[in-house]
Image 1 (cartoon, rainbow, N blue to C red):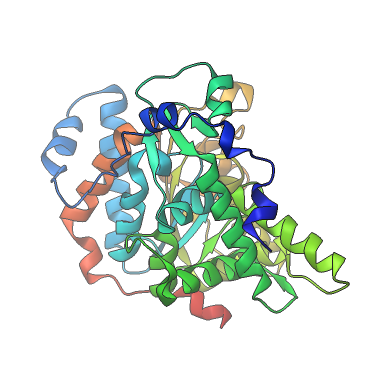
Image 2 (cartoon, rainbow, N blue to C red):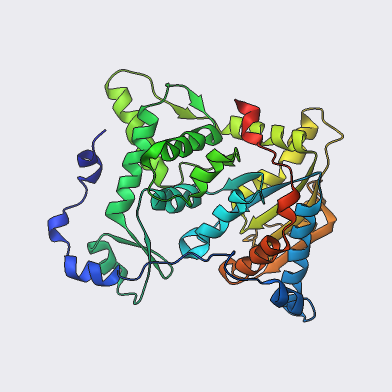
Length: 360
């Protein structure tokens, strides 16, 4: 695989370098939850009403997850909060043993975290010109955040390069992402505070049930096509293995709590492990005892994956005793919840699960 092949769709000579530099001049700075103590604010919000009280209760439930010695925490991430400034937040949760497994979108893991681990950046949109103008400059837009498309194609290339280096056989997304983390840890990464790298180092498995719906998809397609042209074999992704492996973790873990940012496929994937375990004959498997979901989606039109946490109880997935929906844009409330939990310090006495070692 060559970068020339991947980049041939672009004619960089047509890009207005000065205009592009103007638009990509303000880097997104990721929030540091260790630098401020949100406990007084969260406690004060608990004496209010509306979303403030919901958030305080959600923070309390997350702290219960961390203080329960038998509870394993699954972090579920959908949406673009990593690009929006929460990337280091998620990394701190892994670094400080505040999550034990992760289910996320491919974009969160590849286009955002792995992308920055390669040394690239996300940028604040100081202005939003016509999107056709952005296209002419090879700038991709996520709401008010910019990504350099040329840098993103470097991410495609690197994913393909990692795939080329592997034995041609099926891999779960967890197994492939672990290879990505290993590649970064072996001196190739340019950012220590990478979720993918830290998850590899701390044996926290990451699952992306729709992995190819991301920048990784382009690199993996190129890997497969090149191998076919050579008449050789290629690696593939096994989504069934994803489901089986995460279900194995649920069975092993026993008591579990879900910290869910957004919804969609990652949310349902994590919740469905309870039902899958029952189908495999583990009728004594616990529903997820604790659950928090932060979302702006509405259940009425199916946007909330058509399921509140209470509705999920009817499917035998989640307990209604310790659950909280927080209807808020996650970058505005998640830093408060995470900082509160970090400074309360329940993570200091938690045993590390190291679930990734189940599959060695």
